[in-house]
Length: 127
Image 1: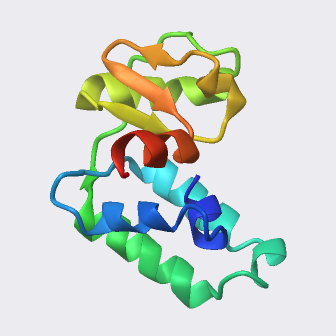
Image 2: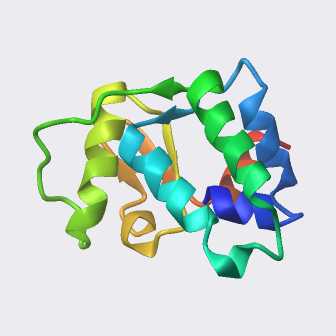
């Protein structure tokens, strides 16, 4: 989802999430590393330089909450690789999971966590 924010102009309002006190970004080191690796792929170089990736990773660590990865992960999602995100949401009591992953979006909600794509989040919370 963060790569989409860096590329897309339509999702520019999400950049405010880094600076608004009303929002707290919660991530774990696995998610930060995943973003870092994906954003440095050759196909994204035409959209933003590596320095921007460095800046975003720094903002994630400084401006958000880096939570400990949950140890007990139950099988919930149709893609088991995504279950750690749901466990993180549950343990950190996250209100909204922003994702573009259809395996997560089909759930719509997990516990107290609403699962939304970036466009729905902007339309619902930032207009």
